[in-house]
Length: 119
Length: 299
Image (cartoon, rainbow over all chains, first blue to last red; front, side, top):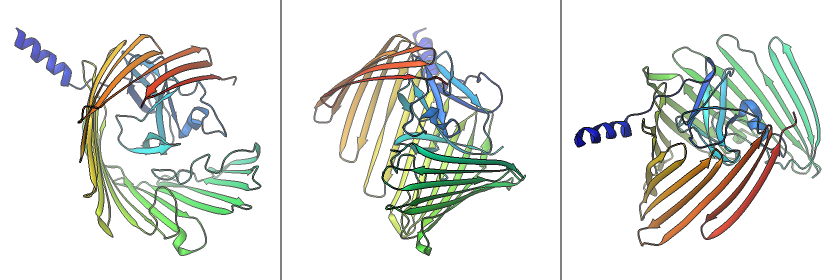
């Protein structure tokens, strides 16, 4: 019984989780695992980095909202063909690149990700 | 000004200390959009930006950008970015020029769309690229007077929370300076997040690090090991989130000699409608910092 429990436990420990569906169908899907965050924003070249790209800009708290379910924050964005840098900002301060996408770039000293939209 | 991967020039490079801006936009002409703006800086310089974006023609598109600085710190930068959809492969080309001479030009080409593996759970993408720059080009994505070959191999998820990346970079004129990096990320069914990363530059150095982090809605715990050619460092973190937006994280690190480096961070975030405020108290490297920020949106 103990061996069975250990086996089941180790499987759950090592089995990759399924990605959640985004709130809206279509567009590019973005997901990040951040349980405990009060808010997560998706900022990038397409939304002027949530206002940060403006001269002496500040982060707009309503920019790039993401939806949370079971610790996963998701969003889908309709993007035209092109290349876009993006990042997640948790609780208005914690920057993180997309750990599920290793194509990287930089934005104002932050490590960010790149998505190529070709369809 | 964006490049293919890294930006050619970032906002803020020239110091936005003036609010005198003149901008003009034209659009709709055969699907072409054009934007012009002039920025009159407090230092006596005038910065002009022009961008022309071509329409999607069924097989490709282009974007032309020009930046001119007039005045004491004069300079210029032109860039033409083009994308062609050849079905089997999608070349992205960037031509840049920072002056009038031949040694002030640069070119970069990246091939996207090469995906030898495409499954329901994920796909494998191979992205080769080449960059060349003249001797007087000082733009971030390029090395002056050098040709750089790069190959990225990416495992991109479709339905499972795992990803991996491998990057190799080499300069034919300096084989000893070849560099590589690799990373792996996975979130397991039980909420454990695994990260492993490695990087190295020829025979000059390398590092390998990573570890698991367990997160639930309220608590988190993580461990990390970082190994370099001449040192080993281990660390651990423990976090607690009593309410959404209130985080307390304590960390403890130690190197091979047993020297401890305790630290921690306490962050509280308040949100009400379109207003957000945060308070952060951080202890790191023997120093304590307190940061307060408030932001309200009225648009």
